[in-house]
Length: 448
Image (cartoon, rainbow, N blue to C red; front, side):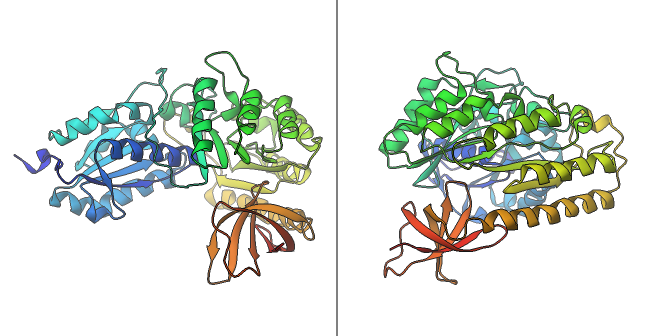
């Protein structure tokens, strides 16, 4: 049998998986890991110890995509040792069988919509197949649900409630790689949340490319009602959700956060640009004014809600005035964090046909100006917490600094010290007095 046809040993099936990109990918990998383990594979932490090497990929930005191919190139020598490679996720769906041409040592290519077929694809792999594809078209109605999820955190867990995207923003590749929007039933979501609570999880994060675009397949609950229902499950202390789309952000989401204490006081609402003209070019289907109306709902909440966003610098046709509109929007909203990136053209998207006339140097300059302004906003915002007592969930320990790493309900990192001889365990909740602020984190002392 040729090298390409060598089957994975049934007696010693091991795998290594590396995940690139967003929280959706991280959670998808948890489900892939659970599926592989249920099929008899054992996870290892090093490529060289694995029979099967999987890369779960992201194609939101060009750098993320290129990183995957660099990784494949770095480890192609392992193919000569009989190891098999699989490319999963968005790059797999985007590039399809062209991956076999670019990296001939890859044996399996599968988009996220085909993960439910992973067990049968593994059988083909074990039988020696050298080119296996799982590439559903974007019209699939299927979601990737599995009871075999191998959650990487024992206290905080993800639940995907909606997959895919119907928005077709001009710059975004997600609708072409993740398929159309398809929601799970509220019954299945609540059942999974209950199982997690029974297993000792105290924090749940609901996920979706556009999480608030959720449409209950049973017609029982709106997104806000589902959010509240998860938050009311006994044992669940925190509920988060990401990522929201402004088009589908409704006032009742804020009302739910006000009504249910376990719903975290943090909203991530990507705006992408502060210019209505650029938003139109981006096909976002809302204006600056409409976005700010949503922000006014959040600011009118009974408890302060932290706000973060995503922004793109240098979209084709963005003028200095358009950029200034983005800067002034950030100043008006007073975000607690901005994830900002330079525009990069993505395959199949409408924006790829637009003249990308803004030089990279200009994009970089605009990005730096925005980040500098935002840093000052965050410095002021974070300083307001000094003297407050906040509840944190312990995430780990920084032994070098003698600190405990915690996270607040507003999703802010709070590093603190304690006088107790035994450090609090990850997953525990403590009250911490904030004594100092930094632009991206807080410092404090546990109230013993």
